[in-house]
Length: 258
Image (cartoon, rainbow, N blue to C red):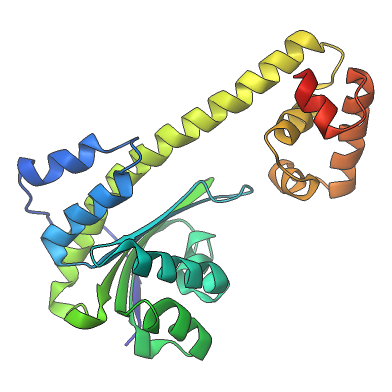
């Protein structure tokens, strides 16, 4: 049976040792963070799969990771199905602010899903029976931590709810720090490109510089328009003006010049 509610303090306490939490905190900012998160969760809840997802207000996802104790092939199969059916997921709506800001707990089993294709691709094929999620929506960003149980081991029992919430709350703290590091690195790269453009092409306007920097990073006009909150045609106009001021005729020339 599908279950969803807003989380309010006080949350359940997490009984965890320093030996259990240290590897997770040490993995923050590292390439093996998702795997460390699953090891932490599995030790406390017997979760067999874990996925992490981060979404900004206007940009593409900042982070998405999926892994499983039963092999990366099954995790990849689940991830591929989820990419296909993300828009059908209730977590997606919460992530984007359908219920406003806050923390939300969701729990459902594969049998609860109305869509046959969604259930087949995301649950039946990778061998998943149930999922619990902690969805956090804040001004400017959203995060989801999801734990899954495998077919071989049954569903998450309702009696385990407090432990699941406590575990995901601890994971969320680590995920926020991990994503924060990634965002800072991404922003630093953006600022570095813009700084070089400002130094070498001081005649660019601020908006032309922003558009040129995002073009250099490989974003399309549609993506840039979504980020800046303007029409795609406006982006194309700024891009053409930037090309003209920089005396280049194409993206290839722009990349070579920068």
